[in-house]
Length: 145
Image (cartoon, rainbow, N blue to C red; front, side, top):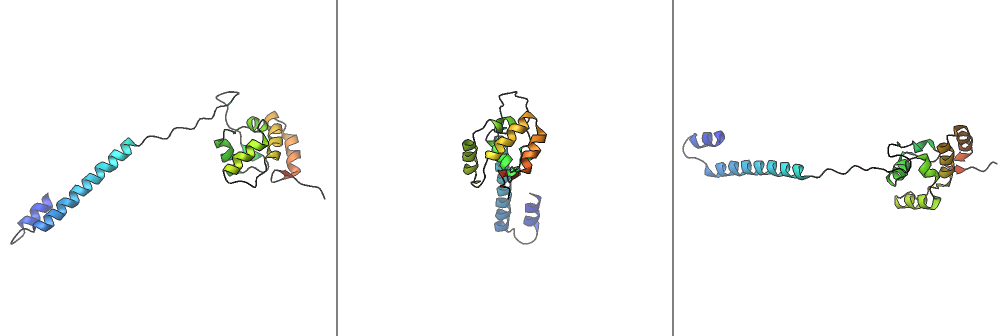
């Protein structure tokens, strides 16, 4: 308002067109601030994704990337599908895992070797897992030449 008073006192005649433009800009600015505040206040928080386990609700996720052929992207896809432990992967059907992978655009992945590895990891047989992984490439058995 101080700017409007200065403009109207400055000289011969007040420029009412400039005053209206300044007032309209000020009103627009205030309305935009109010709309932004209202939108941010009414934005609902996204619900947390909670994974249930059959063993214990406090069971933490295993690092599925320890298995040959599973990288961070595949681990995320599996986790989003509720498979986030070696135990769950060990008891999963290869065809069900394949459907999950296909749905996320990872059609070239073969989960059969992952299930075999997950069984060893779930049992805590790390030496057998290492031996198996030495025979795998990308989670698949490599034919000895």
